[in-house]
Image (cartoon, rainbow, N blue to C red; front, side, top):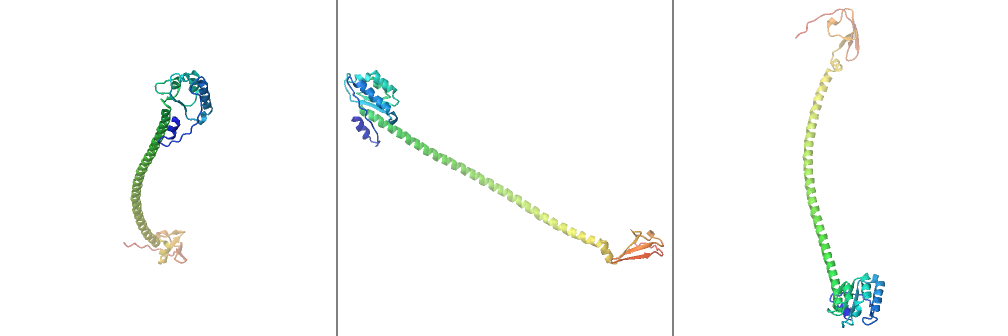
Length: 254
């Protein structure tokens, strides 16, 4: 009752589910009874978190059964933590020695369980706090990294745009210069075309000149022909055929 009252009325509001494995706690039948109760605990081990062996205080003779080898062996082989709350602080038995933890009274055993649960809860709270802090710090670090990368990207993009702007300006100037050069070259070609047109034999003939051929060779001098040669004179429109009666040489005026 002391154990149950302390567990159920704990100040933290923890709810414990308990199962009572009754056993005779003194006398000739106590050893077999306790071993049997521990055997039932073993059968339900998958449902249990801890086994508590408790009884009120008593004289040395009353606690004699807890110096039993069989009880100590059963506790040692039990795959669960065992808390012993037998007698008072001055009473030390084999069960106290082989159990995982020893409490001086059943109430102290209950307090030990409540304290361990509270410590576990505190560790969980601490881990939650550490996790939240870690996530926030990780998020903050990530934000700082992203901010830094964003700044670098902005600077790099700005520099790249400036360089491209300067390059575009240079290319624009080059294109303007090239256009001027093309226009100048076009004018020069126009002048050359006019000159060529003026020198075109057809245009020369059109202005009243003619070309004389002797034996299909253009006549450049009176010395190129002799009396009796046949001449073919090409005009702007049509041709004339003539025969040389005589030649006359004239000096070129300078």
